[in-house]
Image 1: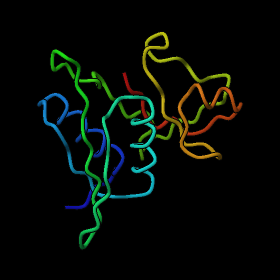
Image 2: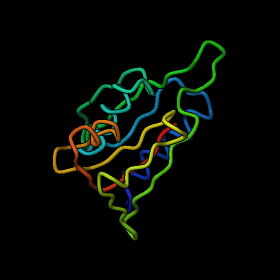
Image 3: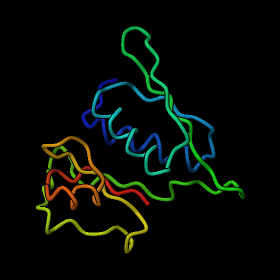
Image 4: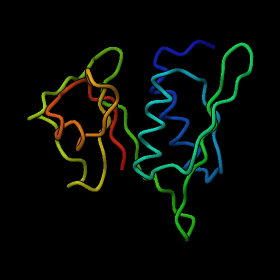
Length: 132
């Protein structure tokens, strides 16, 4: 079944698997999704990920991360810019998520960046999602 918003589908799969306390989740592959998963890994929201080559489309397997009491590392993940309404922000308009406790992921001219890195590089872009 075709999906109109692949990134939104990926975020929903991560949210649902995290709430159901699954150890891993399988997501259809795309370059943008791999870059978002890399950012989530670097920021400590997921354990690890692997790319599997299978026909007709490659897959990304994401190991979810939990605390010592089995509480999920991702408590909330929300799509901001949607296909029907894109959200672009200038560097001065990038707001901290939960007072700095979460992150925003942006698609910029310098690649997929976290809000803090985008502020350092003084570059704005499309606000893809927020994670906390």
